[in-house]
Image 1 (cartoon, one colour):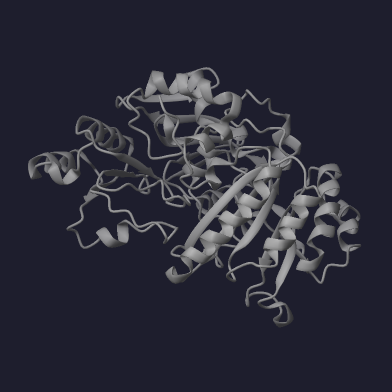
Image 2 (cartoon, rainbow, N blue to C red):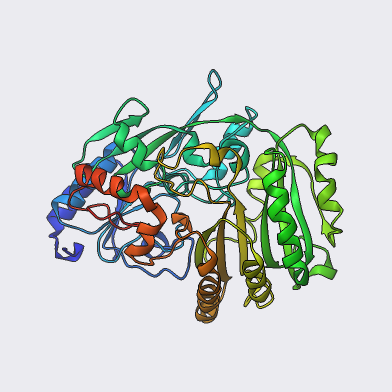
Length: 460
């Protein structure tokens, strides 16, 4: 594997001249800013950034990386927890200049650039009364979230993000541009719906959107001491209630804004709700929640982009992040006790735990229809250590690892790949389960030399 520093100025200059976009080198004044990603714990030093403006730039960049035997990373929104949008010494193909959102109201489809982030998409689709199932923080990149699966507020009603992906344009390791969909390059279309960035650089996505404009949403809170009781109730309620209602359960410390003063800096069990059905039916549907006497309930009507961006302000770029994850089929007594223990010892004010429900529409897709192998899992759990101070990096990391080690014996096996750090090949295999070998075969066909390996890697 060569270092970019070993390439002659002529080779670098020749590459630069092929791009409509620009390159950024370590000697440039913008380099320090350019290499920043969402997770400030990531400190990688790429040899060169290719700031792509169009698909031709991506093709030129892939060819340059391959022909010069460079380590290649692909960066969309730069949100990946493990920092897999960067690499040391090699080439970063940055897609942030490839942005567009084209809404087709004839069939409610949306074509999106490989460099878009979700809040750009949400704002554009909202004007047409439409939404695409995505994640929970709207500053996340479309590309990374989609290729890993995509869990969010609309999962129970409309499935994962990959279940709403209709087509993609992608640049392969040999530099060719292909379109993949249900009838064209079918094997690749299967692979990118959950298989991550292993198979090429996606420059555009086409999604099915759904009629969602206003939602009923917001949090309900209970003292952390009630987490076992609330989880036991939730485990039954969320599986049986209408698919129009979604709510993820969390343990957290309440921040000073925008919550009332008497809640500040105390630990709580919370559920953040999102309802997409007829508003007239909400009150009856929500009665069982209010019967549990939450100490705080702030659930009301809001535009869908508002709930999507609810946590953006609390979790800006530049914080220290570490996370671990698991799928769960049950929230049994041991699991609930673990959440009480670790929810009561949250190490820093922004650290938290989330359990996202996975039933409904997401569970009606076959376990072999996409690489997402855990269609029968009830929850995707994630333990999130967050803090602005680098001095607390060890503290939040240790809390997450201990949390994971305590609850993993009760988990389903693998984890949502977008919630994983660099945890080794066995964890990657466990997360794709019975679909891993099929992914390897497709990898062998399209990227036999593993050019695209800075990811949750499927090895040829």
